[in-house]
Length: 311
Image (cartoon, rainbow, N blue to C red):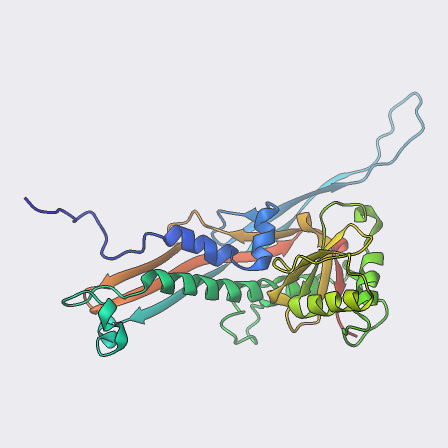
């Protein structure tokens, strides 16, 4: 009698599903979209955001039937980027170093600290996805492999500039602690009337802009408007708008105000190709790492977006 393990794969990380989720939703932008239920799953390549809109005209009541108004269906597509991360890890490389004490006796078929390595990989990939969610650009001129897999919100919103609302009404050429409160107020005042009373209005800013804003509030002695320093969120004083700091907008001097319900993230998740694995390759005598997933984003209504770009 002996162990029969023929039905088991060699050295496979059993946390793969959890780590894929940490990778995709570890960034702040993806996290808040997931929390708001704004994630479409099962996307293999592209999928439509189905949009319903219409108009209504009040009429004087009387005899007869006089129809007016229209109900319109439109679509915007979420195109996901197919992304993978691969690395080769040879346990024998560590045998002459202090890590040798963590390597199993005999010919090693596993790397030490696999859980720590997995967690680190998930966190680093999540940061890259966070940046790509805003700064992604599939144009051939973009040779940055970390941002050229799918189009991010910046590019998608800029492409719809004919319908979006300009929030830089003062033609500011910089965001500073001296003018940031005024610029944020300008964004608030530019909100289209038909969504101004929405309960899910969010102003996305970079962490650098968020820090300038909270510094300005303290300088104005508005200490009672406390920010959530851990989540890096704050309700803009005397408004129904929450400011949310996201790393993907760092260094861009961009701000975007819209309803949370107007933004969407797309992924697959249910696809067998979505994985996060370590395995021992007998033919190469090495441990291999592979993460594979799909991700993309888009919005529904350009006219419901107030965008800020430096003059």
